Each structure stands twice: as structure tokens, then as C-alpha cells.
Image (cartoon, rainbow over all chains, first blue to last red):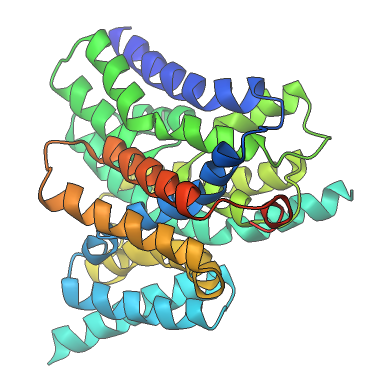
Length: 102
Length: 236
């Protein structure tokens, strides 16, 4: 019973945080500064989430760096998201295999 | 607007998210069972919360016998970034996004789903968002079930490299516009530098909160130095 209450609190708070601005903010923002701010938010969020966390994402900094390099090159060449994402993982996997067999 | 096409487009865009979630939530499943929760409880948490850092912290609080107030405050702080994302997405919604659709789709505002939705050039439709959310949730919940039920189902050589999938996708979203616009490049680099500073120097700031600070500061600087014109806005 208590456990259910805790889970309900977790889910409820998380849902409200997501729902309130998304549902009730309906008008177009007029301020050029705030529009610019919101324009840059996605890039800033993703960058802050990726650096430096990506270097810890595979449990080995060597495989993570190789994976990051692969992703950067393919992203620079504007390959599709899924290609970049899976190639990063494949590169990390292959380097990991090589490392364990040397 | 062709709803079926939009939905299929959402499913396709969500594939890398679903795959990434599968590996991340696998870890969450292992963690939850380790903290004394049943596989069913772990899966219910994943289905109702759909967030990584918040769930991990929540399980920690349950395991440590923390108070309900603590649970609420921690969730608020870790997940507050979603409100900023919701605000950003609210600016590019298609007319078909009625209040009922907003109430439903807001369930699925996560870092990754937000990323895919805001990388889209077109206006955001409910069908597209549902497609992304469906496949992502599928990956998230089934990964939790597998992690909780089978523990070490996959050898580490396979599961460890899966940890980079989501970050690879993030890079694929931010690199091309950074190449074209120096304003975006500036924001991306500023956010990354701040993130490194917070991670290694201001270590007392929680991860969810740190992301919010970095993103807000970098975007505020970007908006001050490179205000967007009306024509630029559609092309984000």
C-alpha cells in the first residue's frame, strides 16, 4: 500500500511537470529574446546531456571515445539518426572485442 | 495531414530511442530488483514514469525508506527540465493538437522524445508524437522487464556498448545545425563547457538540475548574442 503511494507520487509529480506547460501554454510568445531562448534550448539540453556523459556510457573510456568519434564523423556527414546511433554502438562493440582479444 | 503517415514517421524516428531505452532500462530493471522490488513493481514504475534519472532516484528513496515529501521534491528537481521542454514544444504544435491530445502526449515528454520532436522541421502532430512515444515506451518497459527478470541476460560485451546509442543520436541531432549556424555552435559549445564544469567542479548539483542550469545559461547567452529572426524560427 505504502509502495503504491510512493509510485503514485513519483508518477504524479513527473506527469504534472510535463503536462502543465505543454497543455496550458497556448499563445505564441512575442518577445524576440524568449523566442530565441526557446529556439536554442533543444541544442543546449542535448549538448549538456551528451558531454561529458557519453564518455562514461559504455563502461570503458576507450570504447566510448571511439564510439563518439564514429558518431561525430557520421553526424558531420549528416547521416540519418539511426545510422549514427547504431554505428556509435557498433564501433564501441568492435573496439571492445578487439581489446578483450589482444 | 495524413495521420497514418505521421504515425509511421513517428515510429521510424523512435526506433533509435526504443533501442537505446531497451539497454538503459535493462539496467534499471536490475537495479530495482536489487533494491528489493518485484519485476512487476519495476515495470509499473517504468510504465508510469518513463524517465531514467527520476526512476533511479525514486527507487533509491523507496529502498532507503525516505519520506513522501522527499520523493516529491526529488522528482520535482530532477524532472523540472521537462517543463522547459514542454514549453519549447508548445511553440511548434500543429493545429490538430487539441487539449485532449496535449494531455495524452505530455505523458511522453522525455529528453530523447523531445529531441526527436524538436529536430523535426514540420509542425508537430499528435500522430507523429504518439508513434515516437509508443515505440519508446515499448523499449523502456520491455527492457525493464528483461533486466528485472533475467538479470544478466546479455553478456556485458553486448550490453555495455548499447549505452552509447542515445548519445550517438543526440550528436546526430546537434552536429549538422552546428556546422551551418555559428549561433547554434556557440550554444552547443557553451552548454558542453558548463556541463563539464558542473560535473567535475560543482559536484554537489544533481544531474537533472545541472542539465537545466547548463541549458538555460547557454540558451540565454545564445539568445542575447544571436537573437533569431522570424524567418529563422521555423527551421529549427
